[in-house]
Image (cartoon, rainbow, N blue to C red; front, side, top):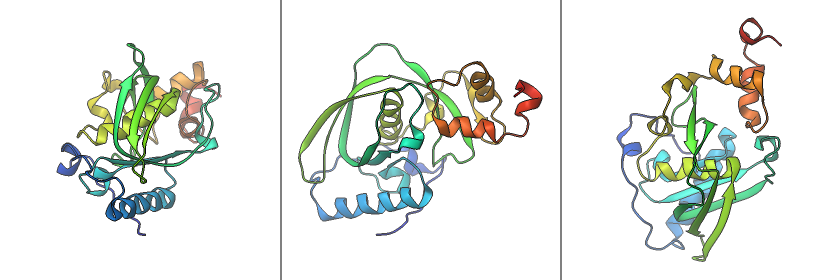
Length: 204
């Protein structure tokens, strides 16, 4: 296994549509998934799509740890999961803005409209077809990663670029948390709590 280099926004690999995987059980796909998992463990992150590590294949690896579950979401931790050729089907018409970060866009975060109830179907590394629903920030995470398979990074989904900010100047995020922090990923709450300027602008 190996820790892989992450492509950053602007690299052409992130702008291309990834190719379907012909055989989800192929040894090279298993090896790729293992390297992607090791990369995420090394960084301490939750999800990664193959194009982010310069491989134009429709493969996503993700997990959900307890520390990243928003209060009141009803989510449970999810183990390491490999999705080959994933397909998302929204189960609602409306989208809800969700705060997101991306390994390919270091130092920034933004608020992205996402479906909060979806179905996702994919093949695992044994070639089995898996289909299940996902909701809340779990659904948003899956949409974020699957967007990478179609050459989309999250700012392309944003409808208000005034909500795109640096992690060390999280003003729009801090304003929202000062009003109501429920439903927000603890990672983003931590950004605000560590911001020296928070008290000046939004009090304690």
